[in-house]
Length: 86
Image 1: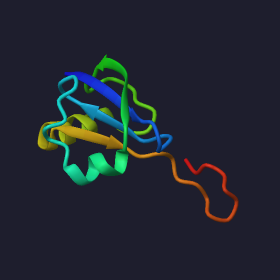
Image 2: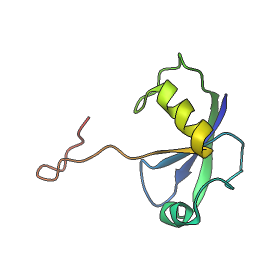
Image 3: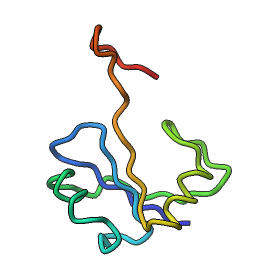
Image 4: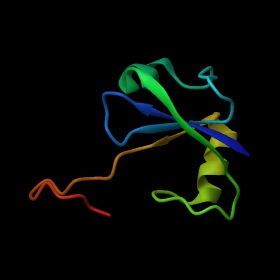
């Protein structure tokens, strides 16, 4: 599956994965507003064996097939220390 990744210019760490380049038709308007301005970041071939940093490839594929997109959230921060939580 081809995967096209867009990053939010105003929300660091927030990425939107699409099946077709520049096709935002399946993304709810409220989510597009939350993302703000996006820019194309990169594309890659997403397969079930592909290693992803923040998600399982099979889960991303399933969600993209169901919804037409996948939203990768930034890593959570520990509210007390401000450090990234894995």
